Amino acid sequence: MKRTILKLIILFLSSLTIICAQSVAERYGDRISLLGMSFKDPLVLCQILIAIFISIVFIQSGLDKVLNRRNNLEYFKVQFSKSIFNKVYPILLSILTILELVGGLILVYGIYFSFAEKTTLWIFYGLVYLAITMIFLLLGQRIAKDYVGAADLVPYFILIILGIMSMY
Image (cartoon, helix red, strand yellow):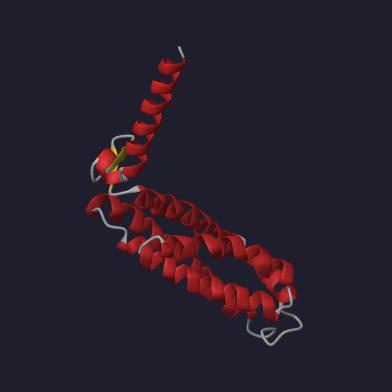
């Protein structure tokens, strides 16, 4: 009885060692598949999911600035009333709207491109573009002394940077 249990443990540990020693490519081939779609590796899937998430955030934010421009202008007026931007906030709102919509649309194109051409190059471009946009947003929040608003940007920025870093 003890020998049988000992043999089973040894067999389990040896098979576990073999499984752990194999790379993902050795175990599953050079592609993974999810819902019938092939991906080069799990990082590509993560890049696409990050792009979907971030594109939703920025397109929604840009559309809100277009559809509720009056409310956004009022918010910007109050937000920047005691800053160097107190006279140019309408222009800043327009620039920010364009930056957000363009960045989100680059990611949407990047998602399409990743499936059509099997490369996430345009997702990379979109994430870099939006990282720069996030730096502008952070700068505006800090100049307006809205430190809580600036801190709210950090998780999005981290996610964008992780997406960029995953491109290796």
